[in-house]
Length: 239
Image (cartoon, rainbow, N blue to C red; front, side, top):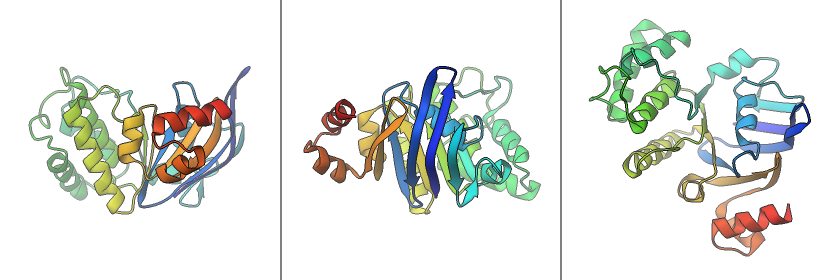
């Protein structure tokens, strides 16, 4: 479970995150929904230790991100749209590298990698160098390396950005499977269709502030709008 309380982050005169608070529970997919620049990525970067908050707290499975960041990082998998793949390494080598960074036992590494290659249908790219990979193929490698250590929590920043329809459907299927395994999945997106298709709970964020959190039904009831895009527009105008 991920719990954020009164989180604040400034970059000089710009307030990127302003008193943000929310909970992402186990066995659910929670979506941060907002326009580009709303504060979604900054919030996620604080959670996985890339940025330090100016104020507030962030807890992952009851562990404080600030005071015990290494322990938190051991329990999370992170996937961003900045793939950062080495063009000379194969798909398998990328995953192996991250597994060893995580300190996994050698006897377990290949078993986990083989399982991920099968689950993500990566057989045709596992032994190929990353140079020339499509967006979908890069995504599969990035998702595999974020899952190789079997984390309890998964943080994803715009996970389907630039993907084709078939690969997007594949990602959705994988996330639903992880949810059934009682993982906590927190993702950011500005794509209404993505949030509607995936998320059990939605956090609407704008100008660094959380304006509302709830299920699709709760947001529809509170805004009297059945369409998420219309509900979002009403919430952000009122916010």
